[in-house]
Structure formats: C-alpha cells, structure tokens
Length: 428
Image (cartoon, rainbow, N blue to C red; front, side, top):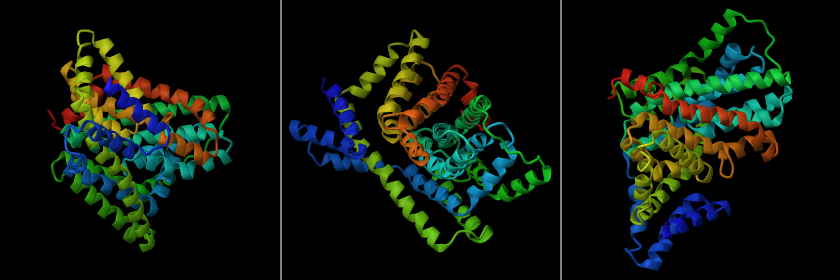
C-alpha cells in the first residue's frame, strides 16, 4: 500500500510540473523523515552512489560530440547525402528526415538532440513544401527515437551501466532493430505521402552528384564505425570512445571543414553542461528512489510477479510489454532505465528471454514514451517547432507508434534480430 501511494504521488508531482529529479528525491526524503528508518544523510549518499559509475562519463562525451557535429556543418553534409539517396521517393522530405535521424543517431545517440537538430532543419522545409504540420512533427519526433537504438545510444550506455551488461554487446544488438525501424518508418511515410500527394525531389538522379555528396560526408560517416569497432574490438572503452569521437569531431569541424569557430566551441561546451546536468540530476535522484522501492519490496515484488507468468510465455510477453509501455508514458526515460530497467531485465532472463532481446525491448519501449503524452519530450519539442496543436500531432503519430509496437513484438519473437550481430562480434 505504501509503495502504491508513493508511485501515485510521484505521478501526481510529475503531472503538476515538478521536475522528475526533484520529485524522486523528495519522496524518499519525506519517507525517511517521517519513519526515521535510517539517517537522513543516506539520501545524498544514495545519490552519490548512483553517479559513481565510470561508464556514465561517456554520456557528456557523446553529447559533446553531437553538439560539435551539429555546429561543425556535419549535419548539412548528411542532409545533402540523404537528399541524394532517398529524396526522389514520393514524400522525399519525410524520407530525408528519417534517414537524417538515422545518420545523426550514429553520431549523437540522443533522441532529444535529434528532434531539436533534425526538426529545426526539416520541419520548416516540409511545411513550406506542402506537408501538414502534424505529419512533419510526427515524422521528426518518432524517427528521433532511432537515436536511442543505433550506436552510440546514450540510453544503452545508461542501461548497460546499471545492469552491468557489456556496452559493446548491447550496441551490437541495437543495429539491426534500428535499421529495420527506420525502413518501416519510411514505408509508412511513403503510403501517407502517396495518399496525400506530397512532393518528391524532382532533379534527375546523377551518380556523380551522389558520389560528391557521399565524399563530402564520408569523413563524418567513418566516426560511428571507429566508435563501434573500437569498442567491440576492445581498443577502447565506451568512455574512451566518447573522448575519441569528441576529438575527431573537433578536428573535422575546426580544421577539415573549417566551419567550427571558437565561439561555437564554447556554445557546444555550454549546451553539453546543461544537458548533462539535466540527465545526471535524474540519475542521482533515482538512487534514493530506487533504494526506497527496494526497501519496500516493490522491485523484488514486481520481478517475482512477472516471473509468475513463466509457464505462459505469451502472457508474460504481453504483461512485460504493457509495463514497459505504460512506464514509458508516465515517467522520464532516464528514470525508467535506472529504476525499472534492471528489474524487468532480471525477470525476462529468469523466464528464458535473452538479455539482448529484453534489453532492446526495454530501451525501445521506454524510448517510445518520449513521443507519447503526458511526458513525451520529443513529442512536445516537435510540436513546438512545427507550431501545431498537440492533439493533431498525436493523431498523426498513431501509424508510426503502431510500427514501433510491431518492432517490439518482432524483437521478442525473433531472437536473431538482436542476437545475430552480438554473436558475430564474439559476445557470448
């Protein structure tokens, strides 16, 4: 009963607009103050312990790399390449948006950053070309979730750090689902574009133009390969990989493309500090909140309840998916990954589901919450950029959300989708 009341209180505080980090830190503080169960100094200790994980150092480094890429004209080169590759399909700008998100994801790994960066360029262009504002916002918001699947995913780094899983293994597991969902989004875009009569890039295809666009973007495209194979090959850790990518992004922007100024470097550092602070406050607050749920037996109770469905695997999968999706809608992805993620993963492994399958379902399901109300930050950001009413964006999001639900079911039913590449890379 106490656990249920705590969770209801957390949801109420979030819906009232209280920052989730403060809400999660407040509840265990109040509980300890009233029950005198342990010294109140345990709260800051738990917050410190939650942050005392070396892999988390990779988070600000990946964020900084994305900022340097954006300011260093890399996104412009990716846009030109995307236009040459998919712009001539009906609904070309929507396909470019999806492909841009996939390419940007391989450099940044943040769904929010992808929404802001790609949306800032593509949503105004789509509206000007005759696309509806709702459709423009939906394509941008939902395709940004690919940034949490394709390496270097910040969500996967966080999840691996709290579950003691290999970052390289989970990176490998996310590649095929990330590419697949991108293609599925493009299929939805095509169907809608044909029905609505949306435009396409009319300039005739020229192999030379494609070659030039590829060459201009080639150096940027090598970065995710360096990062991935460096981690999988044991050349460097995820944290060291973040530092390597930051250094290469700076060299590209400053000395190769010569578009990054010292003022922009300061801007990138400032934005990275702000974004890192916002994420780390939630991670720190999740420490005492997770401790409270563990003390009350809630997390262990949830795990045992889920394992109770082990004799009916189909029912387990249904309940498992429902919990992931509902939690994703009601709470921030960082909080969900840290608090609920380890419990859900442990339950799935106990009933025989592989760690790569369960991890991808958890990460993708929580990412889906970033494009659904009431706390979908990518959903709100895209609607704001498009200057469209939230309810209209929500309606146009439905077919794309349906596609992601299909992906989640496929991950659970087709083990090689997440297991083939990790096995090929040598992970047991």
